[in-house]
Length: 130
Image 1 (cartoon, helix red, strand yellow):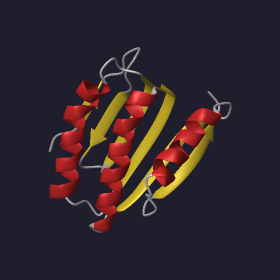
Image 2 (cartoon, rainbow, N blue to C red):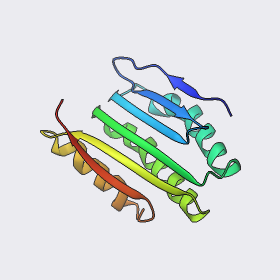
Image 3 (cartoon, rainbow, N blue to C red):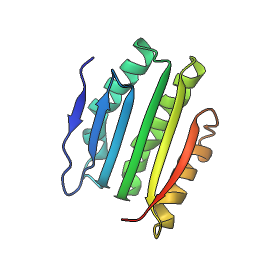
Image 4 (tube, rainbow, N blue to C red):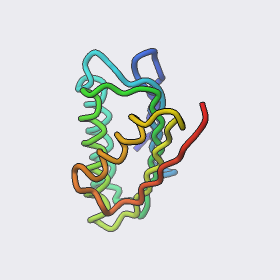
């Protein structure tokens, strides 16, 4: 599978996916007009990768300046995919970065993780100063 780079826009985050490095990075504003259209193709590729490659480890780094509620569904889907990967033996680390003044983004990460019962990944809250 080839790496994926989706360029950042004013309303969509940059997405960098490296199958060889077993990493995913999502960074920026996230409020596309149609989140399903934006995330859909990428989610299908990520699902295929996690099921067929069955990596031994995987790291996701997330840093949102803003995310709308409609886009959180896609993030929820990613968290579920990563949880399912752990059940197949993959060690998953999520680095959830947030501005020290942004309680909403910090709490969103916790809600995504614990709200859907994902307890098999390593979840690191990383406070940053933007």
